[in-house]
Length: 254
Image (tube, rainbow, N blue to C red; front, side):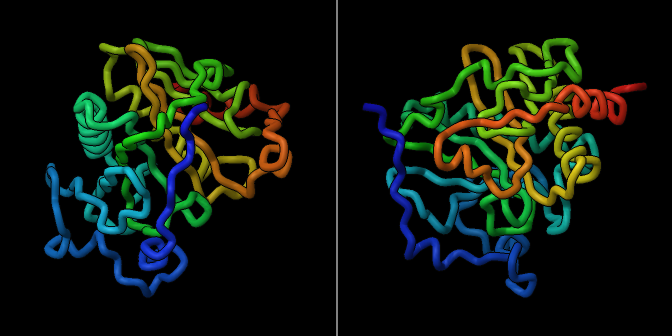
């Protein structure tokens, strides 16, 4: 039987500050001098051990992306965008190769219904002792309508979504330029927040590794479909080709 459950410590979770819902909450990532257990840093990009270890049998770290609390990955200057992704991917790979963990999750929450609690831009890298976080990974989940296919990077609108409706995929082949991979991720996040067909304030980035390729799932967050929650049935929107074309026209037409 696959071990897929993580124990969440509710008492620790109750202590976590929430600067998304309460704008008056002091941001812990803005108080650089008070950060504990800094693991590594590159300018304003800092990797720290998570102070609120809500998961059992896990090593939890937080990647603070910038010193600008109101910043957002979708609007970063290119140089900073590439630095953030390089820093995060390097530490994710380092944890994966350490041999200490069954698997390592690398993801980002943004917005009030993304599952996050801190507004300040950040990602998380979490080593799991017992759980394989890619237990149901399938490359078919990254099939889709092409938006961009170039130099070892493919950007698609998913026709086989993990959850349903609209998901964007980026695949990065080994040896390809990181900059194009990062550009596609940024374009996807920016599109969801600014040009989507309905108001979207939240998204997640989920990273996966399979053989020599790295994958990123860009997932807009809304109320989850009851068909998926109750039955695990994904619904696929009928206008995915139009979404793919719109992204192509906005970000990659020149």
